[in-house]
Image (cartoon, rainbow, N blue to C red; front, side, top):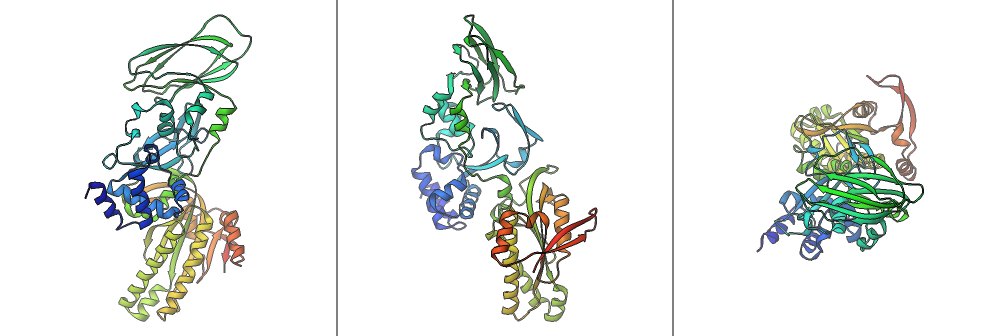
Amino acid sequence: MSEAETLFATLRQSSGDDVVAMLERMVRDAPDHALNKINALELAAKEGIGEEEVIAGLLNAVGLGIFEMSWNVMCPSCAGVISANKSLKTLDREQYHCAFCAAGYETTLDNLVEVTFTVSPRVRKIAAHSPDELPAAEYYRQIFWSSAIDLPADLEKLLREVTLEGIDLPPGERAILSLRLPEGTLIVFDPVTHMAQFLEVRGEETSERQNLSMIFKNVQVPVETLAFRPGPLRLALENRTDRRVLPAVWIANQALDGLLKRRKPILNAKRLLTNQTFRDIYRTDTLAIGQRLKILSLTFLFSDLKGSTALYDRVGDLVAFDLVNEHFRLLQEIIASERGAVVKTIGDAVMATFETPDRAIAAAIRMREAMSDLGAERAHQSLHLKMGIHEGSCLAVTLNDQQDYFGQTVNIASRVQGLAASRSIVVTEPVVENAQASALLENSGLKPMLRRVALSGIAGEMSVYEIP
């Protein structure tokens, strides 16, 4: 049995047969580019397998060394990868800058960071493992652009429509390109060093030769815009890096605009942090100590088992312990099935996160019913949950040696849970105002009841809603 066969046999112990068969088939038969920067959501849709199953399978495969995971900071405008990282720990800037778009973006985990998967060279060697040997079009497809852009099969043909001139320049080499500048906006760009120069070509055409020099280094420099007239240009290029560079003169036309607008859903960092399989595998190795990464919108659910102290007193420690453990098992199962993750448990309480408010409400409704069923099954009708849900911005941090969250959103969610009576779910205004959450409640026949409350440590009163 080969090493790959042994690894996939091991993978079957933690992942579904459909997912393992799919990944094994891909590693054996798929073209090289299909095994690089795998978009988990696109793969799930293509294969007709649930997204969570595919994500869990890929994560387990990474743990076995079959695939490698990359956290790519991507430009929201052009979908180019600004920074590729093997771990979240190396995201150390408050802002990332895209030279191609001449724009900067605050570092957030919502839509700026994609997570992709590439086959490990120990399992199969592919062209992307040697990026300096890729042709220019394939370098853009497999290295520069993220999995968020829907590239055509014949990318080389499309690139010819948006490229005035280009060259493959080895390390230490110089080159001179002679070209004629058309009127409009041009971008001299290298996807390897991410160096760019904008040219605004305006006015009457000139017959005099114009000159421009660019030196490619391993240090990023500010992007400038230079004025030229239509006509001849002598473009001098020098590569002072230890890698080949691929400078090209891009034309900012409709074809380029159309290319950059071709988008597809991605697995972003926020969603992966709320995935239970990810938390189980990487519980203590996600963020560096002191690292703080911003999330613009995350939904928190806090639950607490009402009357657990009296339960211990009434049925005894052993029976109560089994009930509480079964309660934790059921809650984690429901939370994971609604694309959430348990962050931690505190006594009989649970703190969980969800990508969106509707997922949290769906989980809360199911959790409430599950506790009623468990109470009836075990003849303990007093098993009731008090739950609170709030959505907002927060910081992803490391606390007590595990990935956690910090901020006022977390505080409010915890305090809102304290307002809940037996079997009630209390949510905040941002939660009920979410379109998907509102539709879910309406379809479930649940009418939230408004209350104005004061929360400890929160200035003024705020609106909360009780879901009966």
